[in-house]
Length: 108
Image (cartoon, rainbow, N blue to C red; front, top):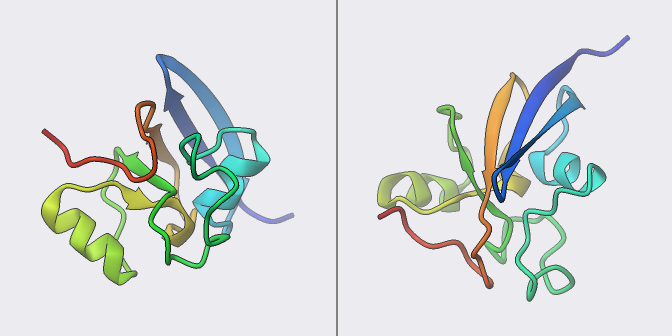
């Protein structure tokens, strides 16, 4: 039996708890659970999880090391993390961005 982790997703004031197999990308886990990280305009027009379009941004409650160049900049300047570049390797809390059109905005 493979290991799985608890991922709590917050969106529009509700919480959804997921059990995600270790090694799954956060984007894939969110999409499989019908918790899309995309805004309404980027739901169909995105790069498919290759880290190129920056439309699958989410806020992570926990400190997860940034391996992708975009995520290193996001950490530095307060932008959302790319869910396609986060591998689920621990329990985590994720906030979906409710007011996102295409890209997520900076933290206030």
